[in-house]
Length: 108
Image (cartoon, rainbow, N blue to C red; front, side, top):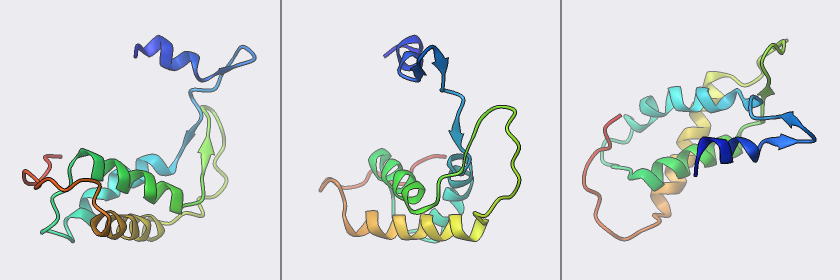
């Protein structure tokens, strides 16, 4: 799928909505390695990483912002982010999406 096609999906009534992002997305990404390091026996594949990311975001209150928006307060703490990642990781570990053996650690 081309970038142009993806961008078209974020257009409504001639307004580009692609710049509106959940601020927690980056926070989850920034904290995932620290939490994964707590589980050295777990070697996530691409699907497991995506599942942990999506589940963690779903456990957190959304904090959407757009370019030039003012952030008045940040009620989602780093500890809340890390706890959501831990819960998501345990859930993924307990519910694997496939039965094939993991090839080893994912390189970050």
